[in-house]
Image 1 (cartoon, helix red, strand yellow):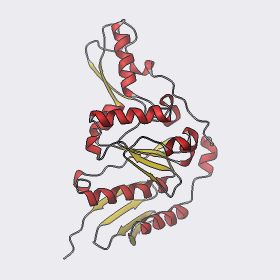
Image 2 (cartoon, rainbow, N blue to C red):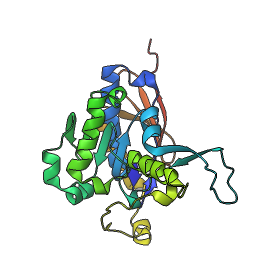
Image 3 (spheres, one colour):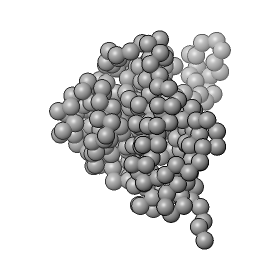
Image 4 (cartoon, helix red, strand yellow):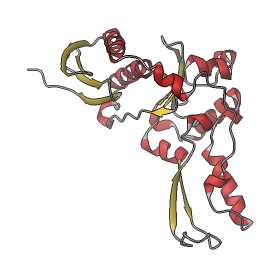
Length: 260
């Protein structure tokens, strides 16, 4: 999840909470409240395999590598993750805030090729490119992901496949060996903030607390405990609890409690 100016928040959920269709939809709804809590500009949802395929690059250091590199060894890099240099890509689940929707073209989102699309209370749009996160790699859905980028403007997106192709071409010509040197420039918007002005506009902890409570109550949870400043614990009627640390912007606990 990307928050301005270019911060990153990462959430992981265990498989047991998403295999069940009802639990999965509840996690999706909960994610929407996270988008609001973080004032997220862009967010994606993906299983580990998809994330690795689209952000991780593995290569073998070639013989023409400069001093400091060992030819024949394996190297790993992660690319395309800096929002200020381009949108990281299109994944199974994708969220664009109102700024990005307007910049890319709100009319394009009206005719967006996707599986499911939702207009959120933030004014942003969330959509998926496959029925489930585990279907992302099926040919028809990989094709759909490509269609989305073309539809919204492929020059605004980082694409790992394009980077891999460039590296292979350069290696074949005996050219540069470092993927980072072959990163292409994406089209980016003029962001309506600078780092200093954004820091001065950060919401107070109290305001974030109120908004978080309102978001969670809208999802059917009630506040049951505040073990320390900035930490909120919510509970559903069935005993399920969610612990949110609004200082760090993380969900530290998500569990099903046995109620006898």
